[in-house]
Image (cartoon, rainbow, N blue to C red; front, side, top):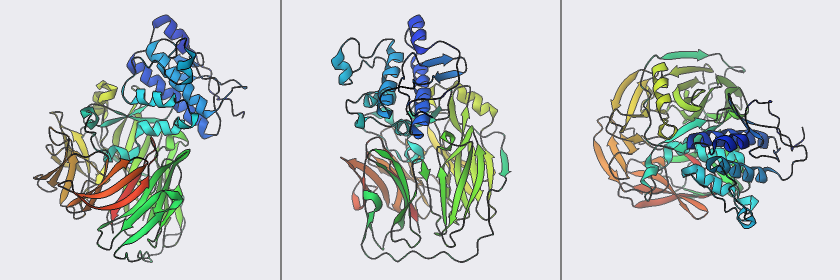
Length: 534
């Protein structure tokens, strides 16, 4: 296929140019939906190495069944960077009803567009895509991931002090005509309350002979102080024999390229690449299993097949899970290394948005997945009533002991709390007063403490007794990302310093115990870290 052509179906309906000429600028919600649909189309074609070359109000059709991008011209000029500039100008046109650059050539050359009614994350993204230097414009998939925040960012983002609005949870949205995910900041969303529950096994995937019971190799002992240089110039990691947690996997952004995923080698001495963009690759606590999950599989495949590698024998197999419009994100191993937990999202066609339908449990011994639904039709109906910016998603994490899973939820008083369910999805306990769980795991290494945010009138984090919900400490507010626990009295917090992400162990009083890592930071590209007990 010619790289300058984007093949789409023929669509009926007015072009964006015609719709604006007849009815004026689109509403904020309609503009947002259009931006997502067109960006998804670009991401799909850019992934193949192609580009559109003729994107504009005349090649976007507002059909009854959603937004469509018409075929690009065979002799389309430019490339992917130019597509992103055209996308940004298109969105600004939809929001204002006029050429965002007016009649001034200088405004066009320097990207000084009239962004009109655009606001928030979409406005910032549009502005960045209009950068004068093409290399400074985010790629289409990067733009999706920037809005998405990826699975880790949703759970780890800490409040931004100068902007209280940013303490609000993010909501997962989908475009009207294509399969892409986007996260935007929004107000506290609707709680998906317990209802009809379905626990359904999924047929086993590609298998070979059962893995032998050979014990996994123990990682090499950590000396008093060890420095690990991460691959591909990603940064530096410092470890100590006294550490109770260890970095086991991560993905980081690269200049001019997508993010890359890595996992610790079986002997624990370093890291190896495990996948490209959108890949999460958690290592089981016993060091035997490496799971590989494409958290944006809906861009490339109909079904999510989770890959597993036995790090003792080298055996590999896949387990099929769910098909579109469902997908799994944010994988986490049980402490006994037998079960992988994923939060299950589902796209709702009516509002082009995604919600947490339930969770997925994958048993590596039987190589089967069980789908557990925790949201019923009534929950979905209530979800649809929410404004797009008011929707929120709460991901599942293992509770201490592996007998229950836990997630945040919205209380009737519009506060946030934590809710525990058994492995069939039944609610067994709720603590409505503690706030939103935060971190790759909100529970301390011993399982006796819990960290949350949105737990007080001021922007802060709180430490609680996990069993009783008694508040133990209020942590001074900080910018950046919370990745979890270092030990019983310190949290792992990442902060951006120029082109670096500094990761530190920080006490409840805000004092730094020591620096754990220094990573490359690329603006608008994600850096997700998994620190696990060992």
